[in-house]
Image (cartoon, rainbow, N blue to C red):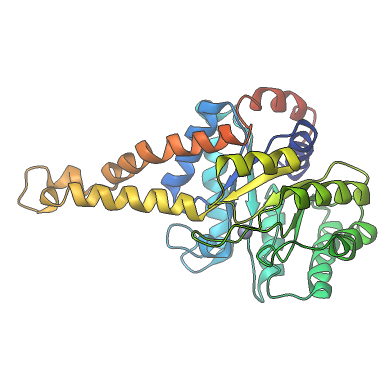
Amino acid sequence: MLLSPQQARAVYEHAATNRYAVLAVNADSPAAVVDCFIAAQACDAPIIIETSLWQLTGQSFGAGDPLLGIDLFLAQLKTLAANERFRDVPVIYHTDHIKGSATIDILTHAMRRKASSLSLDSSAMNAEENVATMIRLGEIAMQEELSLTLEMEAGVDDGVTPLEEAKSLFGEVELRMPGQLALWAPGVGTKHGLGNDLGGFSPTAIRAHQEFASELAGRPIGIALHGSSGLSVNQLQDGVAAGVVKVNWSSESLLIRSAAAAAYFDSNRERLDPKHPDFKISAMDDGLQRSISNVYVPKVKSRIEALGGSGRASDLLQCLGSLS
Ligand SMILES: [Zn+2]
């Protein structure tokens, strides 16, 4: 079931109230998306498929055109989510790390196509630009009578965000445009990528931001965690206990898939000779993708389980039934 913005908001609130987090995967190929659905279905869990600009313009989707990328991602997600096999999987489509001069155009397109929730990359923006962009999205949603569920971020790679910034960024947007924000992504001591220094990861900061953002909004607001790839299971669970409801997962996911692909080609080198009797079956994309899937799906499942997402889908579907 592909969720509407209203339904996505209900999932984020459900996670904030019940203290679990939904895994958000930057799945960057059709096969990676399928694998995420398989893992979520096996865990009876909700899943977020999120797309940064590099995925939207990537060769598997937009091939340079981010709007086409959104359309192709949504076409695959809608089709899979409506299939009998995956009908009971709550699926959120989220825009992640959209940046540059086309940001508003890309996100407007996503809203018109009913993306479940939106965020953007504010790393090159000052505070005023960050707030103004959020407000602009709200204005467009209002003018065009579109539903909007937003994640707002602040310096996610820049150490721990001071609470005053939660007020001047999240609080300012909530004041001027009440009710559109569902997630807050402050810096909590993580960094994007693998192999970065993670000594500063702070569940204390997560708890303080979660409580403060919820107070500013007057409703439960969960924390979106960026740069989770290098965190241990214990650190992730401490983060969830402190108020993380959405865990973005990209670098480690890419490493698992690319390492599995490398292993497949290494072990099938001889069969990829056109004179080999198994050449054709070894050269087909399906052989490679099944081999990756065998490694990847168990890893996605264990990540979902670590975040407390398992067994949540049935309860969620009952809550979502009355929302459109
Ligand atoms: Zn991120």
